Amino acid sequence: MLHLIEAAAVGGMERLLLAYLATPTGPKTNRGDSVLAVNRGPAGPFMTALQDNNVACRVLAHAGPFRLPERPKTLRQSRAARLIRRHGPAVLWNRLPDRYTRDACRATPTGYYDHGLAWYRPPEWAQMQQWCAHAIACSHASARMLRLHWDYTGPIAICPNPDPIIASQTHALTWRGDAPFVFGVAARLTDIKGVILAIEALAVLVAQGRDCRLIIAGEGPATAHLRERTARLAVAERVSWLGRIRDMHAFYRRIHCLVHPALHDAGSLVLREASSAGCPVVATHVDGMPEWFGNEPAGQLVVPRMSRAAYAADYATATMDLPPVCYDPDNDRLTEPKACFPADIAHALARWYDDPAAHARAAASARRLATTNGVSIDTYTARLAHQLATLAA
Image (cartoon, rainbow, N blue to C red; front, side, top):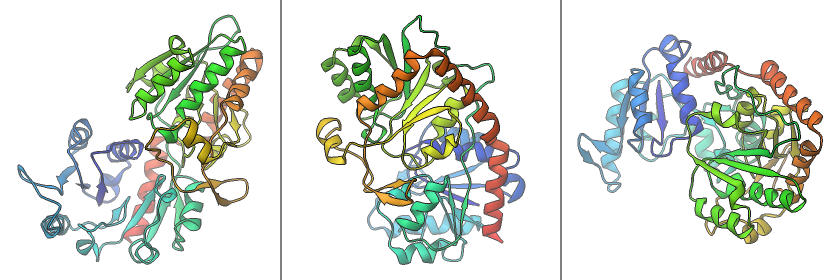
């Protein structure tokens, strides 16, 4: 089995891949040896973790100690062809072949695993139909985007993300109304995550006389922009910056609820993670985020009403990274990306601030949701292995 990834940009999908390869029900049990072909790298700890799981790692851009130039492209094409043919993979999955790997993969069944790329510029329709024998989507929204945005007509299997492993003893703070109300954000600090909206909501709550704090876990290119906004709003002393963290248990033990004001999220891992910790969530009503909650009152969904242009003018950095379209789950259609107004986020948070009993009910619902709707890593890897075996058959 051949996995093509960009090792220079390790995110949630790469961590899922690592968990998949490290699980006994993964491909080493079902499909024989696992091979990872890395297009760019190396990526330090991620590559080391793969090698610790006996995954053969190769970097297409390197031949021994030498980095191959992008031009002429035949250099990388030749190396890709040698690596692919040497391993003779039964399946190529999780991304479409690129200009370096296309020729060598013509005889290999190809699957595409979508975790959000379907929201961006679609590939040429003919290429998608030619190369993709089977698609796997991380959510219903992801599957619908493949149909509506990419015009993909082939088979699609929905394989929801697994729940992050949060210890059963990890509990978010209980709100009793007698201490500062602390809400958190856990995200890469980019415009698309809407972190600035949480900062603005904090300022609204403070102006209304509510004693609130914000903890931000994550780092990214918008960090300086966000720090400047906290100073401008005079809430800098109320915001704690944790940077990139490994111990999410400690993060959830410090907050009463999570705010996830993303403008786009195909199938949010952080919502599942928060629910596992009994942490209520305020999130955007768009894309795959409403799917997690169902009918459980484990969170509040805020309808995004701010236009893309208004968000770009008043909140985003100069290099805004929004997709061209988003998925409207209520009407099953493509729509312009929109943002939540900070006042709407603040209104949702104020409901819990003013009613500790409502917060307690939401926290209990979050735990119940994680128990009833959660997907274990073993279940996830078994489902994924089944889909890949179907593709290889």
